[in-house]
Image 1 (spheres, one colour):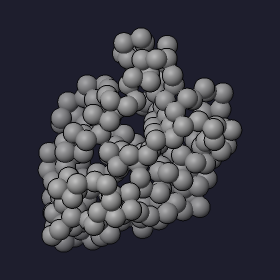
Image 2 (cartoon, helix red, strand yellow):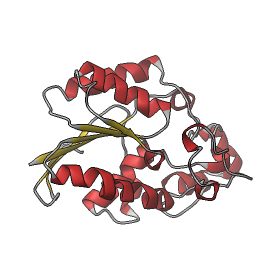
Image 3 (cartoon, one colour):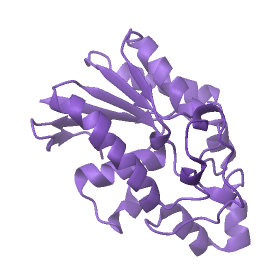
Image 4 (cartoon, helix red, strand yellow):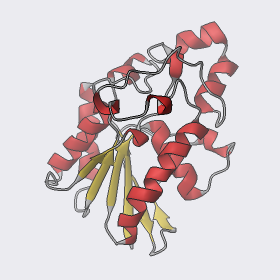
Length: 222
């Protein structure tokens, strides 16, 4: 039996302000730092052999705190843009409640929760600098539906995470709400409409016990 653990980053400054974040690189709040420490407490005693995270610092810092608290700083950590949060396009930085007033509750619900609906696009992609300097600009999204995010996230799991699980090595993914929702959809074979109701809380570990074929035997997900 092998374990896959997934943790959404601790509360970010954008979470606290109720802003759309997406690929914006924002810090953890003090509450978010505390949530990362609490996540580590819940993972005490687990043998984790590799950590996977996005290139966004709210997830990276959460992963670092967990590793440090568990004395796992020696464990490899892989950072990939494919584990980034869903790209919220032109909505990023805006207050969610204000967008409900501007565009209507139903439209915002579709942007946030629908599997296929894409938020309004940016006029041009983010610059290919920093963690994206080696990424083909044509790959950079202007906006993403959960479906589009799924199509970059799940291949990372299949190509990078699953082989290590198949070798019997417990894996930790520290990422984002939409990242983890996409993986839950894949792992639990949740329908396109039913994924709407799946919530992922900040800093609360989801642990899957898997068999030798990576079928889920047990999960603590509510």
